Amino acid sequence: MRSLLAERKVWVWAGVWVLTRFLILSHVGFWNDATGEQLEDVSIFGVWSDQLGGEGRLPNEEAWQYPPGAALLLVLPRVGAASFADSFVALMLAVDLIGLVLLASLGRREGSDAGVWVWLLAMPMLRALPVLRFDLAPTVLAIGALVVIHRRPAWFGALAGLGAMIKAWPIALLFGEWDRGRLLRALAGAGGAVALVFAVSAIAFSGDQLNFLKEQNGRGLQVEAVAGLPWHLRQYVSGEAPQAGLRYRAWEIEEGAADTVADALKWLSLAVLLAAGFWWLARSRAIRRGREDLAAAVVSRDFVFAVVLLLVVTSRVLSPQYMIWLLGLAAVVLTARKSRLRRAAWIVIGAALVTTSSYGFMGAYGTSFDIYGSPFVMLVRNLALLVAAADVLLAMYALVRGRRIELPVAPT
Image 1 (cartoon, helix red, strand yellow):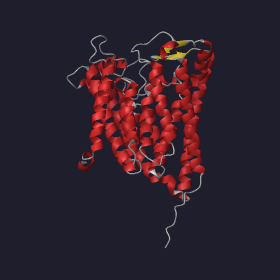
Image 2: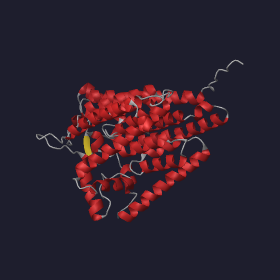
Image 3: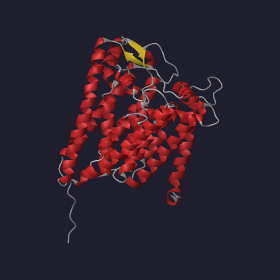
Image 4: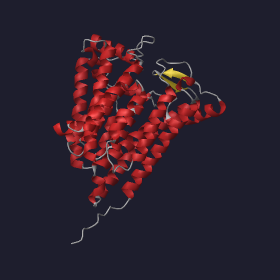
């Protein structure tokens, strides 16, 4: 630890973090007397926190679509003496700093500081979004899990399980462990973490602990989803905006074809998971046949990034905070010089930055599809995600189907 603090670049990172996070806070409006604080979803979180902490019950509304770990997270800001909003933002800043430390540690081990700089500079480009949602929490738990992958199987699984108890996606990290013995320990760790969160939540809060699954299943095709590309293109060419309605606090396309697409996407997401299972099996078999290059942790982290990216691309929902997940995983990929997915990671980072200009962060829900900005910008963002998805598919297929990399033998 002392040797790390002695490095000049660490102090440079600390200074940049302070400056960029000050910029994030300025977007919240803490020092803007004209507009005041623009809290967006934090106001909703405050209402939920009152129900959770004051009434001891889980929110019973369609917008509550989160595992019980999210409920425990939302109670934490009530502990401080400050207002809920101030405490929530401070909590997210603390989580953000932990993410920076984890990426710095991983980058030092893997030989690249690119991931650290992505975290420092790309995250603020999302303006206030990182501290006005709680997606930083599962993202940083996922980063922590990937830091210890193959090294501490139980901790790897437990961190993935804890992340999945806030937002479901970190459970996909378990695909990254190829060794069956370590995978069993990781599954035990994940199962223990999940069981613990459910038990604590059941004791602390009344209500259906699994209700979030029902609400998620009822989602339609959100206008921001990658599968909304035909409607984005139609609006760009003809100016005809899709019919949209506000459901689950998000705008969904209310046209017959959109419902069909939404149903198909459920099966496509399942197909992604099945394909990930086949890739995992092919990798495991190849390693047992002598492909030691496939056993490296960098391959596991690449694979996890690929799976999560494909799940986001095939999702019926693509809220702007999803880009926090992808930014975090892209930063992890870029900590390793030997990653096969560096190009895809940079494409995803570009797509995340385009998201900012697309949404504009008005701080309020509008009444038409136009609130999501230019259809051209939305086209660019979603096409970029499609290109990145195609890139990771080809790269991971080529990797597992390739030949063993033979190292040159030194002359005797």
